[in-house]
Image (cartoon, rainbow, N blue to C red; front, side):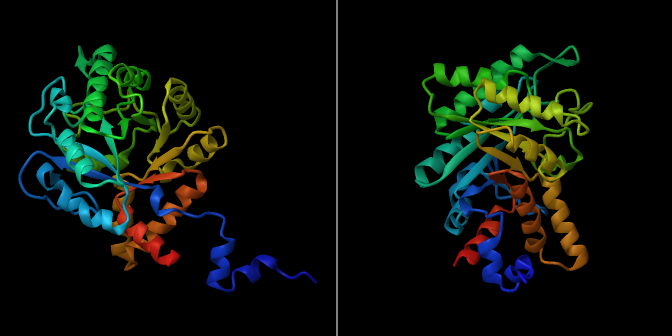
Length: 323
């Protein structure tokens, strides 16, 4: 009799490790970072969501880099907002200054930057509003200005998140014309209108002052629409595509992985991480045991790159497993 081969491979941890179907690399994680203009570090009640003044960004990131985090996604939290979100592309803005400081201090770090207007507009929407609707032309112009300003500061990858039609094409053209052909684009290609962004909006002060974002983010009931959005971004020149949120869209990630050759990221958003924290506290469980189960499920679905506020803990856990 052959016996139960699968059962035999479960008997010892070393056999479970060598026969597992899904492996995670510590270098496949990106940690979001919130950069503000001045003041002290503002500690958040949510894991990994502190607000860091740009003059303290290097000292804040140093222990994270030492722990193995190699990629960061920067979000700006400005002091001044206006209807155009003009501070988003200021040369001395929080993201621009933080990028320069990081690139000067860390040789082995990849810097991704969020390209959007919601944190910078006084109305909190991701585009330029006129007559109660988004002016696409002006929105694309400003998104392109932001991307170029980040590239000028030294960003490795710019990440448009406004879900504006044509944003990847517009940004790619602007980067190329400005001499930044080597700067890559990671697009928030399938960004759903979700209730799971609330902790982020609290930390980034980016909640819309009227209405919501359902007119330009994807309806969470739709999968084919998400696939169409992603394929359009690939056609426009996106180097990496992203699905957001991650855990509620594993079917989308899986469907895309079967169709795409380019790298694919998934963003485990603030609400997902908040659920990990609160559930763990409620049930008396280690946060990391819950978090790793979620991360592995995202990877198993097909995401090769994972953006998460738990990146340092996950990386330390994986490095421990590899020791």
